Amino acid sequence: MKVWKSAVASLLALCLLLFAPLTVFLAPSALVLAEEGAEGEEAQTETEIPESYYYTIESNEIEGWPQGPQIEAASAIVMDMNSGTILYSKQATEKQYPASITKIMTTLLLIENCDLDDTITFSEIVYDIEEGSTHLGIQPGEEMTLRDCAYGIMLASANDIANGVAEYIAGSISAFADMMNEKAEELGCVNTHFSNPHGLYSDDHYTCAYDMALIAQAAYANETFREIVGATEYIIPETNLSGEDRSFLNHHKMMQSDSEYYQSWCVGGKTGYTSQCLNTLVTYGSKDGMDLVSVILRVNGAGKAYAESTEILEYGFENFYTKNYDNISSKSTFYDIMQLDYLGTITNFLSPVWERVPFENCSIHITLPVDASTKDVTHTVTEVDVSTRSFTYEYNGQPVGTATGKLNTLFVPTQTSYSLGTDVSGTEETVSGESIQIEGLDEVLSQTTGFLNEGYQFLADYAEQHFMTVLAGGAVLLVILVVLVVVLIFRATADARIRRRRRLEDEERKKREEEIERMTTAEIEAELREVMEQERLRKEQEALAAAEAERAAREAEEMEWKARETERLIDELERERQERISSEHN
Image 1: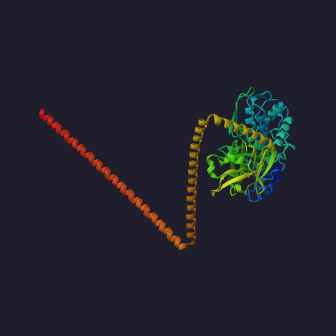
Image 2 (image 1 turned 90 degrees about the vertical axis):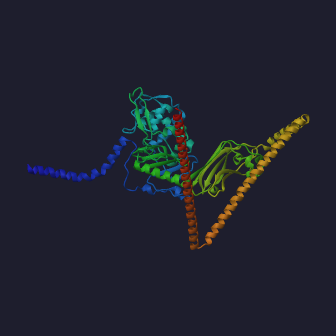
Image 3 (image 1 turned 180 degrees about the horizontal axis):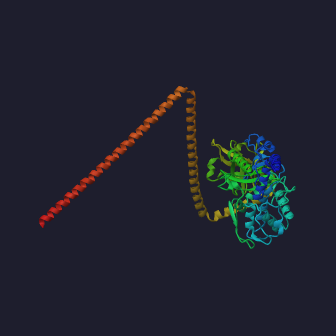
């Protein structure tokens, strides 16, 4: 019996020795699968540094460009959504698999093609997803508003809802995928092909970081999408087949204030994970007047995705700034029409600089490194049509902004400067643009000349028939002109005085700097001591003055108190005298 027990014990010990290493090896994989089943978008982080960590960061090779951080993600990008400038780029056009960040495109098409207050009735298509993938338990025949669907897709990453919406919009998954690809082409995507609305792995469902940034940028431009992606939680009320509310938080943990990954500047985003794609992440950030979007593709671990997204977005906020120049519809001034140079700041009274920009409804946004000036920006011009030009602005060959506008006057000056404020030295910064003369000018000039002749003849006849009226009007205009000239002269002289005072201050400062440069260390120290002694004496005098004022105040209070006491005693004596007189009479 003892022999048998000993044999069994030996056999068990041998099994443990054989399977222990295998158990250690399989444990992380089992945990990943467990997390995938629970969240659908989580993965464990590898301890070893992957090969992707050493992939080339293209933006670091741009001359004069701030050096971006090295990260493990196979592909990544940071884009300024206002100017379209790529701030950080790592393997940005390489083919990758997006996972659930695909749903940004799905939600954008839903918003653009549907009334979100309409109701959808789901079909059996809700079951056409991988077992264990993220869903909200939608049943065939269940009814739900498209607005609830949009929140379910973006916040809860529900694959069953994504399938239902795709079928509702296009009739089938394949037809909806065609719509997705058409939209991607319209946005300028260079390496994208979608085959489903949810992002579950497929060989022919791929994208790149650059394309996802374009898609995310287009989606964020939609106000409804911004409301959805910026929500931290949502509740889908009970439906015809569900007797309870469906409540869920935004899967993007940088949005949740109780999360270790929380960032106050994060305004939205979308998570993604499959075992083949690993973790993917799109994050929107807004800070210091900049609106950025980052894309992380193929990194092992949700925590790693959040950390690296934070790292590259903060790199963007800290190392770049965006100049925004918004121009409403404007008309050329007299100086433009007569092809004269700008006559100086005095004409600001009648013609502000911004009125001279010959574009209609044109906004220019330029993003540059913090140590760069808009003076370093060059531009190229592309003719869109007869009256429209497209401008591309570059810094050391890197695109940093674009603008398109319509020319709206007969004559446009040969050079136009877009004022972008002043730099730290007080010098005005400008970004220049070219201009054109509209075709068919001879015919236009002929018609204009005839119109002017008719107008002149009409005015001459009117003046002859209404001489006194014209004379009075001329006198009024003359008075107005004199007042205007006086105002302009006063403004010009005021500007001259200000400039003269500033010039004297600059000269005095330079003179003082030269004196300090000629002084020895001992002289500087002696002067500093003298200044400190003067400051000490000044403070002592102020303290004495304050003490004297306080003493005087106390004396005044005492005198006032004594006066009140004296007045009270007099009143009491008078009252006693009156009482005595009254008693004697009685």
